[in-house]
Image 1 (cartoon, rainbow, N blue to C red):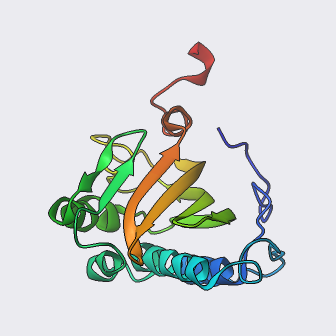
Image 2 (cartoon, one colour; image 1 turned 90 degrees about the vertical axis):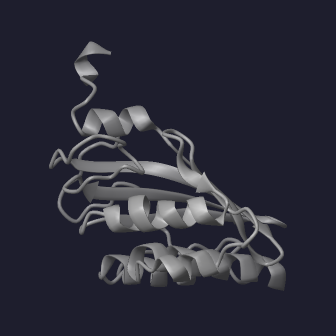
Image 3 (cartoon, rainbow, N blue to C red; image 1 turned 30 degrees about the vertical axis):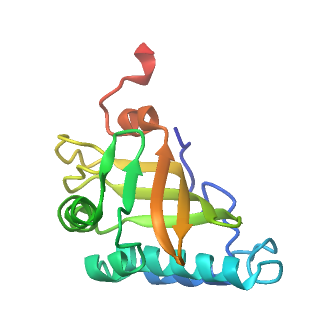
Length: 196
C-alpha cells in the first residue's frame, strides 16, 4: 500500500523523460514543473526502431487517457490477434474484437475524472517497452477492468504498476499489466489490513 503524503509532496520520485513529461501534462492537465528529467535510455541511447516503439507506446497511452479514443488506441495495435491482459484480475481481451470491446466498454469509459498516471521509469528493448508507473484516482465510477463487480467506494487509491508492451511489425502486439491487487483492495476497504 502506498503511504500517505503531504499536500504537494510526490509519493514516489517522479523523474520524467521529455515524452513522458508531455504525456503526464496532457493526461493530468497539470504542468510537470519541478520534476527532473530522467537521463536514461530515452532519446540519446535508443536506436531508431526503439525510439519508434517508445513513441508509439506514448501515442497509445495518450489515446487511452488523454483523448480517450478507442479507434486511436486500436490504431497503434496489430490487427491480427492483439491482446491485453490485466494480470491480477484477468481483464482484457484476445483478438481485435475482444480488445475493441474491452477498450470501448470496460476500460476507456470507466476512468475516474481525477485519474492520474505518473511515469517513473522506462526500459526499451529490441521488441518490448517496459514502463513503471503510479496510478492514482478516487474510486467514483465503476471500474470493471480493475475492480470487477465492485461499486464505487469513493475512496482514494494509489498504486504502482508495471506494463510490459510487446511489439510486432511496428505495432503493439500485447500488453501485460501487473500490480498488487491486495493493495488496491485494502485501499477501497475490501480487505482489512488489521486482520491480515
